[in-house]
Amino acid sequence: MNRYDKKKSKEFDMIAKTAFAPIYPVIAQQIVDRCGVRTGICIDAGSGPALLAIALTKMTALKTYSMDSSEDMREIAAENIGAEGLSDRIVTIRGDVQDMPFEDGFANLVVSRGSFFFWDDLVAAFKEIYRVLSLGGRAYIGGGFGNAELRARAAEEMRKVDEKWEDGVKKRFEMCNAGRFHGIMRDAYIPDYEIIDDETGFWILFKKA
Ligand code: SAM
Image 1: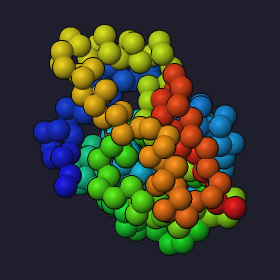
Image 2: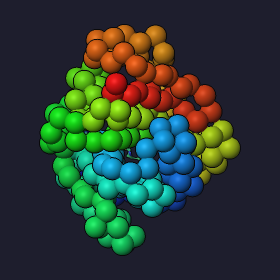
Image 3: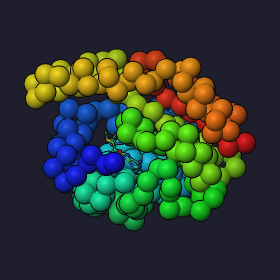
């Protein structure tokens, strides 16, 4: 089920461009530092308005596919990418992370922020991400706000428009426990992975050996 209809997509786009705006370049830099992939093909799965895809593409030589299961979100992403003059380097595409419209070994890097909370079948999604990775390719999947200070700033901004925002975030992050993800990675047959659970957020990093 996709909750991101036109109204919800527009609302999230506004939040991403205001309260969340400072987090995207910081997360993009963390992806570059932790994965070391600066060239080739990147897929941002559940890309939303594409602000992470834009930040990451700007600081690398990557060609990026901004993929989202919501057509309304894809249209917003295309507008944002066009406004940044990056339409030749970021392609928007509608697709479900559990059944991606890419051939085996297509991508050098797959990233995803704040989307896995909504995936129906995490094992299927992680298997699919592994399938589309090239040999030596890296994945960076999870959720977070960059660092503790940026998280606090985002929370302060969000409280002004939604006093229950913090409760929603806490509830979503309840699924982020390492034990659960060890099981998911085992069931997805992904041997070489790392779980980061710190002020940068909760992230699963893996490599296709
Ligand atoms: N990654 C963006 C960001 O951090 O700004 C957007 C995050 S938004 C909270 C979650 C996005 O995941 C939505 O755009 C939603 O449509 C997308 N999504 C949810 N389930 C998905 C799925 N199974 N496959 C692809 N995208 C999905």
